[in-house]
Image (cartoon, rainbow, N blue to C red; front, side):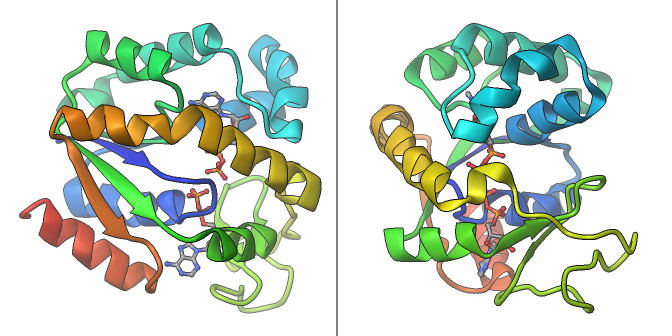
Length: 209
Ligand code: ADP
Ligand code: ADP
């Protein structure tokens, strides 16, 4: 099954994808995670995109599309995939059409107030990418990753100025994809406001699995 997770930053796409990948036995491909691992590894791509991610702007389509095309060519993605955070522009969606057939696009619906609350309380473990929330999903020990014992950090782009920019970028560049995929009859709206367990259950139900 080839799935796209669409929705504003902070809607819970990554949280649900990290559960759904075992439910459906397909890899979770997050473009944000791919960029962050390049930044961490100090690659050429990482150097090119570091400042862009910190500001909350989008990485140019050509760079993003090339990275996704390569990732979808890997062996584990042949049986299906969850694309989380891609496409984010119409040009990216058109490019994806030329790469693989998409079976469904899950639109995570959440109001702005909850988006901001989720983003501003998000904390991550830098080495594993594991995600927490100070109120909604706190670690066992405050500020510490449950498994590695490392200190949790707040992403640069989860600070207030960048959050505002990302929401504007989402509305201007990504939201038009809702109509794009609805017109293709691929869109499934999911209420992203309940607990992750409930959101996952409604996803499974909507996909008829
Ligand atoms: P996205 O991948 O869409 O940007 P994340 O999965 O990183 O979103 O979630 C954003 C923040 O909200 C994280 O701190 C996460 O722990 C928290 N979160 C995710 N899903 C839920 C949920 N259903 N209810 C409450 N908090 C959630
Ligand atoms: P969130 O789910 O919180 O919005 P992501 O981890 O998906 O954050 O993305 C982080 C950043 O990575 C984005 O703000 C953007 O700079 C870059 N990025 C991720 N996916 C894309 C994409 N498809 N196109 C362009 N830039 C992207």
